[in-house]
Amino acid sequence: MADQDTSPATAAAAASFSVLPSPVKGKADWRTYRPIRLPNGVTICLVHDPQAKTTAAAATVAVGAAFDPRSLSGLAHFTEHMCFLGSEKYPGENDYKSYLAQHGGRSNASTSMHMTTYKFEVLASHAQKALDMFLQFFVAPLFTESGTGREVNAVDSENSKNLTADGRRRLQIFKTLCDPEHYYTKFSTGNAKTLPTESRLGYVRDALLAFHRCHYRPDNLTVVVAGPQSLDELQEWILPVADMSTPSFPAEGDEMTEAERMVHVASRDAPSIQKEDQPEAPEYNQALVPNPSSSSSSPSPPWPFYYTINPLRAMRKLNIMFPLPAVSHVPDRSPSSILSHLLGHEGVGSPFALLQERSWISALSAGSRVTGPDFSVFQVDMSLTEEGEENWEEVVDVILQHCRLIKEAADKNPAELVRDWEETIALSKIFFETGSPSGVYDTAPGLSQSIARYGTEECLSAGRMLN
Image 1 (tube, helix red, strand yellow):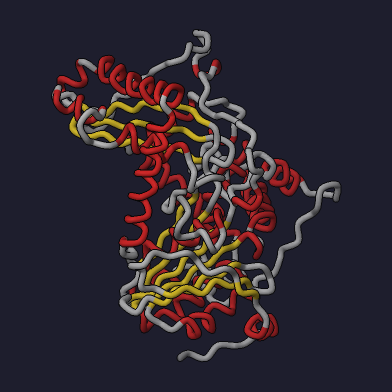
Image 2 (image 1 turned 90 degrees about the vertical axis):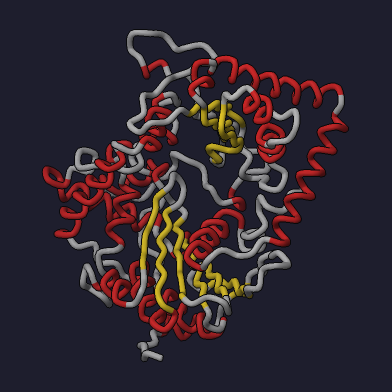
């Protein structure tokens, strides 16, 4: 085992941490879990997997593009990029990725609207140093001025690749249909124009540092480490993150710099994704509305409205989207679960069976497209045949007819829907109890995001153990 310096904070954390509720897990899950909270507020979950050959870790910060200032689109994503460019303990910009590459490892990161997640995987025998390098990105990142200018080019390159990805193109068009004042419409990736380091390097860098101080706090961070090592050994390795201190950021009413004021105002644009911060009945703040500003020459289109996209890759897809209130605060009682079951199943009398019999579709899925803390969007996604494309309006009518049948059943024969819900509950419990865990590289980020959202006790079962 490599020697490491022990700071007073690390030593204190080793002697004093809070034990958190253990996750509810399925019978087929052979892993053991140890959730703890360090004195500085960082939430940790250690996972012992005796079958793993590698060790993986993930860190989720409960902030994303929803909290970007409108004048600096992509700032959260840019912060994600900058965290990888060295730390005080490991100052080389390529040290981390080089070490992983030399020892069978890989890494990645992602920024969503409400979370930013970092992850890596490496051969188990080389995991301790890799983990230390990873944790130092949060304890003491460098954020060099030279790196600030260069890394915007990497963000701009990533955005350029997205321009030819049909999924990304559909997302951006979808956002143009939303209320322009809603946080969901923010341009999450960013590019060289929205992050103008060539002309305003100091301004962008000040905003970067202010955003990091505001959001990258220990109490906003969740770390998961999973591997074949014992829980005690993993706990020893994780303790250096106890050195992460709470950065100084002005409180409301205090004097602020221009960058701090901008970041502070944007921090109130969206509600928290964390379940403990959400009210029992979140206020409905729907994003998907016919947007008058999407076309300066025509008024807002009536409901329902449709739009067509000419894809770059050959495909025939039909998506039907329904704006709904938030469901993320009730993952085990979500109406979307029963709707997904009723509209997405493939048995006799289902929409899929009818449409496939007519040779109009080759695939159908139904479920939540967006699950924000204050709104959601339910989607029915279908792959059309050539004949189905020609008869797309009738395809839509079949789906809407089934929606009407569901409403009639709810109004006239609710016991029938209760039976369907009980069937959905029974199936979900079977899948939860018998499902085998995924690999550690997938487990770590999924678990860190779920803990950040639902807490340690429900992190495995939320949305999978319906009741």
